[in-house]
Image 1 (tube, rainbow over the protein chains, first blue to last red):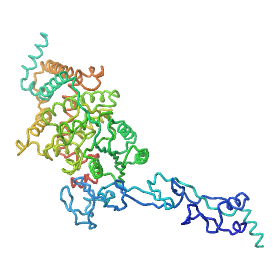
Image 2: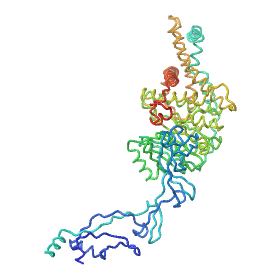
Image 3: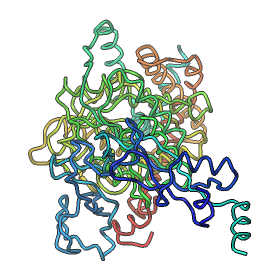
Image 4: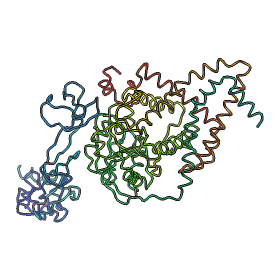
Length: 176
Length: 420
């Protein structure tokens, strides 16, 4: 176990597919790391702040973007065009910069003329047809199958562990 | 009484035509008749109650620019409504202060359902049209960010909307900071007259010309069908007139209250009125051609609305210089008596109007409103009319609204094809 602290490399937590716990590439358990920390050979440093499942506490969560109306993932971002001379705001229906007409005054859209500009983006749902300014971020736990709004997820601070000065001195003494 | 009668004779005999012009300039026949009519009506129907809906599918859109405090007050008032709106959409139109951050916080706290942030100013019309894209309710209320709704305002507006089968319903507005200065107090009297009484009277004839941008409930489908708000300033007047031209009913809900802040200083008040009056003549006359004697297929309400503007706003304002020229022609010895007689006549008429307004006003009446009686006819008949005359002149001759910073410069440049 002492060898782990004397490798001069950081112990970084990683997700293991079959387990809700985190694991380390060095095949060491969390209890062993805690012991080395107590012995003054490893020190914890901030690694990441991750969202975890509010139900099982697992880090195995997948992030997806969904329609705020029906929850479908079949969504697409559409640029919004603003016609400055008639104040119409409408979604761009073609990728061409000149082939559309303003639905309010029938003027031909020309994004290079200064009369039209892109004023943002809407998220359009192909399933329910709703348009919203932005999609909803959803989380799905791969371990317990919980799914819900990302706002419900519990943030968790993860630490990585690096050798202390004491461990380095031992390493140097061993090397010499 | 004898000296009053002598003064009146002097007033009419000195310059009969000028006396007539003066009466027209002061809008005497229209105001007095409408106030008396409504005062009597309110006393007769005072006990009548209106069924208020308990549930309705409404969206509220609040455009905001650099006013986080006003926005929060408006959002809290929305939360206190007796009926809960389905969507609250706030749109930050390129604020340069902390509005964006406070809007994000309001969204986190559930005061806002959809927060739209424009990195570049689109103007009120563009911002409202952008928000309209995301409205899913059959009714949508557009609310100024410095306007606070009374708890039952939404219910009253929807009730009126359904009752009248209207496409737009304006609410009743009072001045929140009316005690701050002489000018805010006098504006409160104006609002009492023009909104609570004026719009109620015009609503009888389906002749409301403008649903205030501060608070108006729209039928979403009707608003979308006319393409939403138009470009440029005065978008509230323009959208009301376009709805009217599309054949829709416009109505007024006198019990749907909201409070807004008015300009505190005379200079700020004049700036605001110049903008409003420039928009009024540009939109009524140049955009909607309301001076045409006859419009094909025009309904009676639209005809009354047009002639209300022509006869009681445009014509008396244009007569103002005639009044001043006429004064110069009054014989020198009689000038003092003529002006005094004219003032006494106006005070008498204003007292009659005030009595009707103060007795039948639906909101609170303060004792100091009476102290404004001696100056109100001069304020309304001379000062504000002179401001309006200048606004009409500057718009007709110099197209002054093209330089109005209310609309972003790049939009004005495209709209008028001139360098602002």
